[in-house]
Image (tube, rainbow, N blue to C red):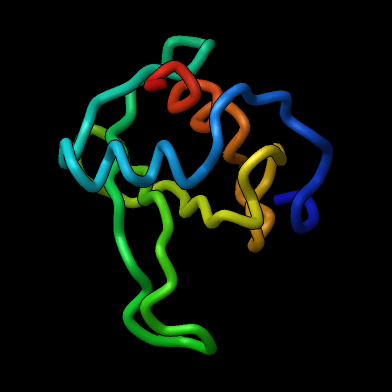
Length: 96
């Protein structure tokens, strides 16, 4: 993994708009620009420093969580924990 919020990712949509669409439509399937299939859904943290914080949960097709995208991570290639999210964000960006 790289560092927190490494490099910028040019996105056209806003995090809150994608989150709202996932909340209203439920879990959705997507593809990254490189063709990797994934599932995304709206979720909220259950514990930690900021419980009840909204995020986008990204999972593989077999249900294993791959990454979490928080509002502060949107527009970056890595999330708060250094996990790569750029391809997932690009796939989600097409939702709007």
